[in-house]
Length: 242
Length: 242
DNA sequence: CCAAAAGTGTTAATGCTACACCCATGG
DNA sequence: CCATGGGTGTAGCATTAACACTTTTGG
Image (cartoon, rainbow over all chains, first blue to last red):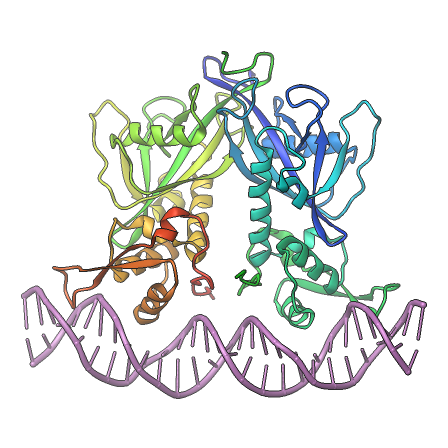
């Protein structure tokens, strides 16, 4: 069976992934150095073309695995938005379906100097213009960060930045890094632990750090099942900027 | 210059539009009867293929105009999500970029019996399975309604369902229709008029209806400029269903 | 002991819900 | 006059914001 009907207008369809994580208290994004034209040598979002027989989400997963060298990239992947196809690629019209990955800080494997090498960069730098991203990737990154910021308000997705188990303090650090604000540790603790269907106490405690050991939590089953669902009702609001 | 680079994998790219409006107190969606296979005779979302040289949003606008006979369709158009390309069209892989239109109740022009004829249908019927929509359009419609519901909570987009000027009562009717709930008129009035950068009093009043004449409002300039922006902070919350 | 982070209690301000109540029009 | 919807006031409740305070570790 033919996978594409004939005599229909066709477009090259790409996927790009904005992979975000929290490192050293600030929001970082995964970027690759382009080895071919256009924009050879410039930094870009990981991505590539959709091949026959796969959905766009599968293509995003595949590209992410290929360009990081990590077989099963952790975190929460969701679709962001579709851009184009007009005027965003010097080669011609290319449609791209951008995706958003919220992930714990996993190490990128370096395959070799000839492959495209992915690495984490602070979002502030990537949006400041100093890195000069390829294509319209700065705009896509901007949209992705805004999406991530608003998602934290009403969904349990902040936990996607943490590992399987995490402390309330680590979770708060995620909110602070993504929103660029400081939150009151006491009030945050009450809100996070008091929200139904959000967190589950594992009974274990973290060790090693300074200060009193913290209880370890994991996402509640209800929140695991539907990661996009609005379990934080009323929402956890980010402080209004003046 | 060639508009599509050669030797790149290609896909047919469609756009579909979920046009929503409020009629007689309930949420309605614009559907067309398909005149060709596949799904000939079935109801479907208006849409079509993206042609060379246009962005997906432009294609959505164009298809909407073509299939309704209305040159400049009113309301707020935004991208919803992208579906596919696998297994959603019996002809083969087709990617579709779904859009969402929130519009006042405009009359659909009937061009003739041979053209695809668009008309409004209650969302409840379209999602109930009685209408049996073509392709995966029921799923897209479901996502669109959910998006519209959550957008009303924090954005000023409820006004997109009304005309240029509207009363608080008409605005409340939009919330009630989209959310399927009843809201207290007094509290709603206070919240709507008390939210900064949301509504602007025109100074005029509505006439003709039963009861006391109501003041006419329009969207504030700030809300007009960025229709998706979260001006309703804290959000206008829909009553939690038991 | 001291610093640092975890966790609990308390209070004041804010926002929402649920009403009572008055206003202005059409019939 | 009455019904109908527009608009204001207010008391009770829930949530939040701000901060005092205790707990438990590492150095």
